[in-house]
Length: 418
Image 1 (spheres, rainbow, N blue to C red):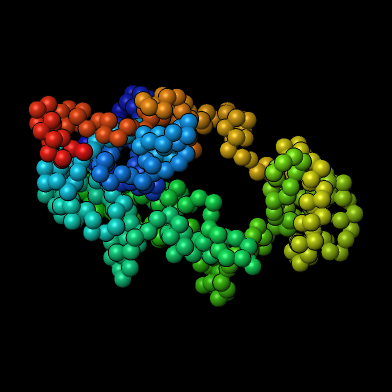
Image 2 (image 1 turned 30 degrees about the vertical axis):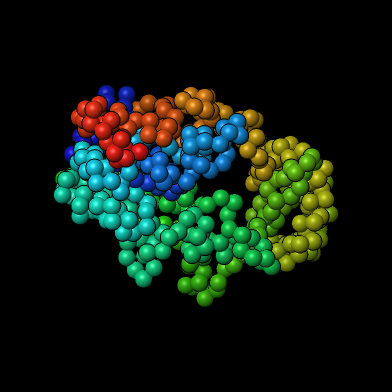
């Protein structure tokens, strides 16, 4: 078992998961982001891949300089910082033995395959426990390991659908549109999976016991829909798509501003905020109107109100209007593009959110920093760019597993290390 306890001096110089090794069989979005969170905070993550069946986000746009390649995906790069990559053809018996040798000296095994896949490869929990009894073994699948639908295949968009998230997104008179990205892959699944691993590590440190973690990505997303569940439980009311409308605020929407495709989000929760908005927009007469005299009446006439607000906001620079409203306590925010975020957002710049790393094939490229900062330990947690496919195969085989160069060459020729 890895010794992850640290002295006060260690806390100043080491990341919190220093000494933890992960045999990472995850791929695509949710699994890769979960192990990235752990890698960024010091865990040694060895990503198991194969050139015969690529991680699909290795070939997902956008590509650096528009040039396609298994090592040029920005999506893959952002989800796999601080990892090493080794290629194993897990359908080859020798590759399975290598995987078990790696697991025997690891603390955590992670995968996000459909239930049963790891068992068929000879790498299920029972097989792994024979070589590492105190292993922490995490599986992340659409529905978890049991139940009438546990065998179903799912991705972020399907998880959004079956969890009910899709049903809440869009216009009430249109089909469900879901979120702009596969939300379950980026927030609920990695967040719950990462938390479960940390809890299991703490339990093992205290008891010496490993365990199996069974993450249902659908349940992780359902867990974020508390108000919707409560509304049905208490009121038998089924919430559905309502655009930007919320019961507690009016107006609450996105409005056009000066320029091409420039917008601002504004949310008013009380009469004081409404008065400020009417003053800033030069529409004090709205305050005396019976149509807009309360949150209830503004909700009743929201379509007409939104049109009138939009006619006024079109005359404003989005950032100037945001500043004016924010200074007087009205929640508002410019709808920023990716260019705005990366080139002109002063808050992200101050926080050091964007990090430049030198990738072996793509050169210097931009990565997201983690959205939280730990007070102790090194401040620079993004240390290495995403690995090339199989970049560390020989290094892991000879350095960690004690294999000779000749043995590695033989296994490459036999098709085990590809």
